Image (cartoon, rainbow, N blue to C red; front, top):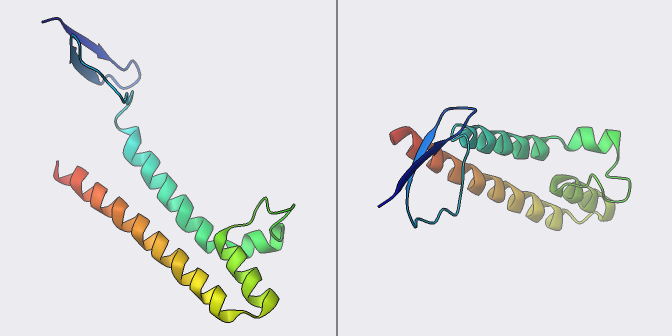
Length: 114
């Protein structure tokens, strides 16, 4: 059996492979994964809370380039006075964020225990 060892020049992590093994994923720096997931989660939460900045700066335009789900719910609610639909969108988006945060916390808990 032929054993090969290779590593990342940036962080010095090493991975040992055997002859004939198939790798489907390569993480050059394993420490980046947690940081990137955290940054994406915080960005999603910020977008959910930044309706005022987007509305004042661009109004959702040009076209629909800066439309987010909270902005769409706000415009739909107050544009057509359809408060039921707007509240349904807001609850759906809140549940979506809650689900993403639960998945993140579960994964972060597994990494801390490991």
